[in-house]
Image (cartoon, rainbow, N blue to C red; front, side, top):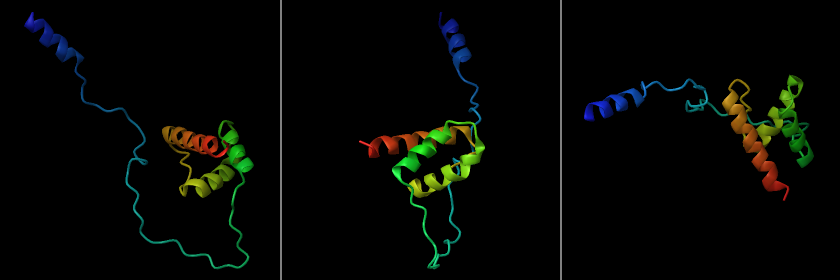
Length: 107
């Protein structure tokens, strides 16, 4: 009986391999130098309205890639990080983050 249980436990054990995933988002980001301060009098920062934020969230669900720049600008303003289009799981996490932001700020 003990031998059968040991064999069954051995067969159930994993082989120790992890699933492949996004390795770039798991690396710690290092800052090498600060970005220069913009001292232009004509510079107007992009401050999205709530309607533009909602539009960016809606555009995330579409297959059209022409709105990526707009979505990135909105996401950059809200969370101070770029939208990672290269990793599918990162896109899902960032989309949920944007969804939660919209739900919390429209009530």
